[in-house]
Length: 282
Image 1 (cartoon, rainbow, N blue to C red):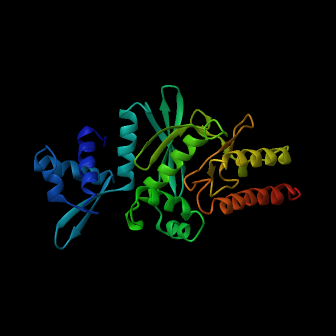
Image 2: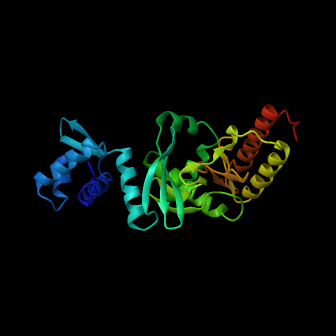
Image 3: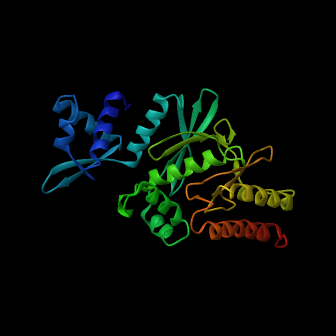
């Protein structure tokens, strides 16, 4: 089953009504669209089969509908393509609790589209850590209450701002665009095959690489502190180039807890090299 502009129109209408409802009463969704009630209900049924919306029955409002995570993915990808950020959509190249990464094509090569996710358990964990500072920064910037925060969109905004601020300072994926909870950025790898992460690579000169990582991090930390820095957030190309990824928990260097987060980040990467390569602490 293929999605078309009519399906997108329905998704957009339901998305707009989410400002008022978590689950949108089906009858209200029907009235917001230019199609007949029969056509709208049919389109919503098709979206449900594609798992882009889900249904819920409430004793007071009756049948209601909600856009799913993958439904928001579709909206973001559709808009990226509509606005020329990407030309074609590829396949998933990475899936985790906090994000799904999809390959895509642009006029100049390949891109990665990172769809941020909301994981309740992970969010609770974040709130107990320094990394909550990144979300709190968004809350403060927007002037909203904690329960009003859209976590996936906040994480996407943080990552896009950090990548934009760091491009040209250290090697990070170049950001191409942001839409809702998704960030489109430079693809690190060859064609649709991503480069390896540091933990999967055996280095010939680990001391030199660690020195370079610390030097790059110190440069970055003049603007942004990563907040979740580790051997899993550094990519290594076939040519041996390093790229620093996953900046969704970053905070500006002048924000609260920045110094403590920076020292924790640097100690994490030092510990990895100490353990794997038996280097002396420095």
